[in-house]
Image (cartoon, rainbow, N blue to C red; front, side):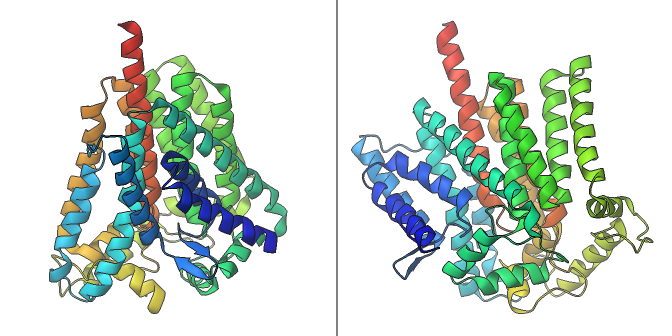
Length: 441
């Protein structure tokens, strides 16, 4: 394991050093680091811990230097505007919150803001002007997720034990964090988490990248992309995360129908994909029972796991009771995370397993309004940037996937990978349209 520790530290040092020498390579390496090293973007170099906030600020500083060297200090904020609106609006609510201290809110806010906005902003600004950079990111995503998926499949016979993530958690001194995650996330058994800290995070990455590779399959007609989608869906099945399956199926069906309209081929492939997924689910009795709980509207069944419709209603009522003292602005930014870490599972809302619960508790009714505006803005951006309607549907698919996943599970750092997927897919489609225009001209 000493060799693995050395490799990770060399990996980390290379990212930081190259950020001042070969910035684009540094960005690509850090993207791979986020996928392959379950550290939430933090680094540990020679007993020196570097939090993700600091690393992202360093990358942003290097990016500004990179732009100055290129004699081009202009920045494109088009893809970042919805996120800026969201975070600035939530920042203004700090002083009206009910429970969480302002200093604690600010610390959590800076971590979320820098991780969500920095790398996605950098990727968009470089990719729209450098087609080769998009190719590098495509290869990075392909190789990194392929390695992670192969590893995920290879440990299926270990009964839930993950030697790699267990070692990394010990290396970063985060055994307690890992233990609290599993204790309060309603996990009765250890599930396959691939190269991530948690199965839900792993499933989110898999679902998001499946949507992206499906979009690239439609654009480039490469069967290899479709095979990768099948591999990632298999990994979601192995991870035993029903939300990942539901959100992936919805995104796939939406993109397929909107892109091809409704014809025999579309219906055939859609049915084939659904049957493939249903077959995999049916082969796992425990996963089948978890899916049955979704349609248990009356909450009458006791032999299934997961949240039924009635449980969701009870959780919503619990959220309203929790913010009774401050219904407009809620209890404060990051209150749900604070509660889980220092108190434990909530008596009615458990682990706040829905985006709606998180928003209500943290930001109240005002937060619901802000997030609704954010959703509208995030849908409008591709319609202003892209010219072809079919390309807009691809971006719609990734946005729909995000909201379905978050509404069903909560918000546990999912904005970070969503921002990356969103910016990259927009850049990929935007540059593709521009190249086609040049070709036809």
